[in-house]
Length: 253
Image (cartoon, rainbow, N blue to C red):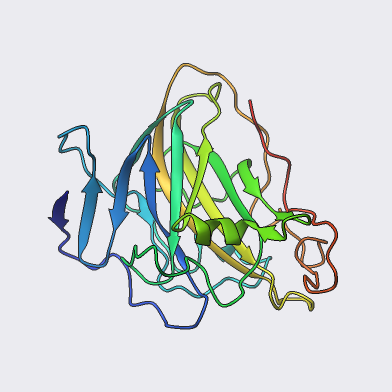
């Protein structure tokens, strides 16, 4: 493990509100680009490469977005592009990682606690320049986990079981180039009234390599969600027998 000091703070101090969390880290085929307020940690057990960077547009704090018509729904409130990109290959295994406090990767703590039950989703958006794009373009979904009425397990439960990690395979036929990756958890514990759903998201900037040609159609943020969608306006404690995950179907390629 190596530590690379960052001269400027990457993440403002997070509030300690119970259950509030942020996606902070990205793993690419077993390599982690892990970020704290003071250092970047690069963990790689098989390679000594020095090509280390952080490509996360880290949220200013761990509070949620609650207005589905706000531009904050794209990459979170007040976030701005960063310089580095993380390199990802088509067909690669990518993992995004969520924790309650900045730089805290303690697996004994819940990634998103306080009964913040809900789905976990991952979107991608092809852009001309991931280091400057605002996220206003088209997003397609590449992964999701909602609710299993048999096991009573939510996507956020899986995050807590797996040390905050959600993995997905990048579709192998995607066209190469710059992309934004948008990791999102939606907490529904107080979603029985309009504006009660809580959206936690982080955008990661990547350069995708490969030889595919697919450019999937997508949705926009805001626009993809309505405050009255059945997966957003919902009482999850009312003998829930099924759940409709917000947004489009997953693009599998």
